[in-house]
Length: 352
Image (cartoon, rainbow, N blue to C red; front, side, top):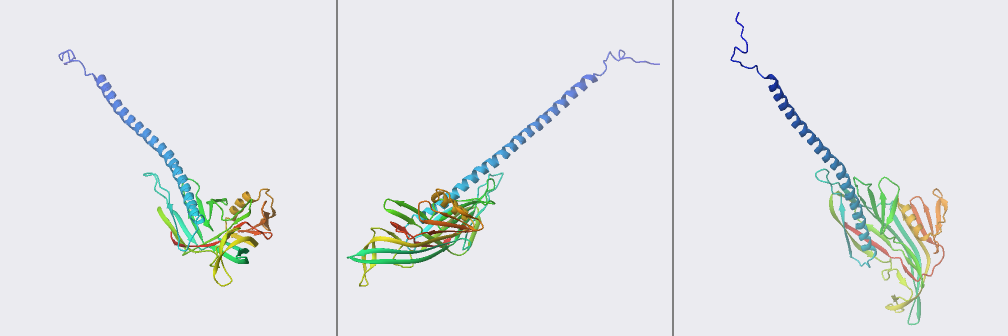
């Protein structure tokens, strides 16, 4: 029998399987480490990006929504100033731009639409009734201008902001008054000024209560972008074309003389025999809150929501009655105001 030993084969050493296995194990571990490192890096990047998106998109959305609500409010306030602070003539235009919709956060979110509309809605209505006598003198002649007027104003402009990240607000423009109501809530408030203003100075009572109506075709626009709302004064003044109902004691006014012509007269005194102003609106509580804060310093009121609530102006002879969606203001005695403005204005809606 031939037995061969490692020594007989030229002293060849046996294969170093241990070293090869170790080298293969190290190479394999290195490859696995690279994969694990890449995976961990990917997970970290995804986590950071996800965290950033989860924080940034809502945060940026909140800022965009808040800015949009402020811009919308300012647009209504500018329109109110254009309407209320002008001395309109027939054909005068009122234009105001409105942003519709809120910009998104590309590429994570797209823009959202909002809508603006006009409606001749009977649930939004105001009316003004008064009896007025203005005593004037010209060339030693005393005469009296008598005005018994009934105005009715309707028309509603509304804008639904539809903000996705902060609570949406609905804006309502009625009779030159802006009401902002939080969507899905009964809470509403008047922003800007009220058309009704009662004050006094050393000369006497100052009453300002013009009535504004808007008429046109019912229309609505929902989109993202900018729209231009345009209206035009189609009527300003009383039913008596010679007069706008703005008088003050000592004023020079034009009146008919005894020969059928016109002459200049001086206002001696003004007598307001009766005054009644009624507001109908689902947001009428906002009117009551604003009026109470200005004119009911003692906070006294009687009645309840079912029977109606009554309160009186603290410093003036006017009372308020609130029931349901109606609020009425009336004079409680004959008044001798120093100045009075009870004009009626009609705005024709041309476009939204």
